[in-house]
Image (cartoon, rainbow, N blue to C red):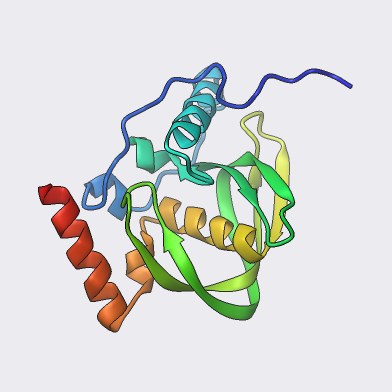
Length: 178
């Protein structure tokens, strides 16, 4: 068995972009430069995600408007899923629709019941440009859909309506003033 470095161990913790920051509300650019800077970004994102105690993090959440996200997330059977995806595309989202609590590192301390499909498939490439296909169910499917939304310029309150949306947006405004 080969010893691999722990994701994020060579990364730096970056400042988190918070709800309302324009970088979170615009679609991210596709990655075209697969230089060492991309590998460092992935490491920094893992370090930031772990420091913030999250299960997923998109590049725009650290102010970088590129289509990249990292994850270290269990599914409903408590199987750990660990990796990153560059230029992700949500190619399947189906199955049962489940409303469950959803939070976001860019809206710290705020959760809302958000509808997501129970199955998701994301395709993209690694930081080396190798094709990758990731399939998830349950909580991990929620994570994959959430992170794909981020790179498309959406945050989970954009998926809410009615009183759930109003409550989440009110809490976000209060948090910004605090």
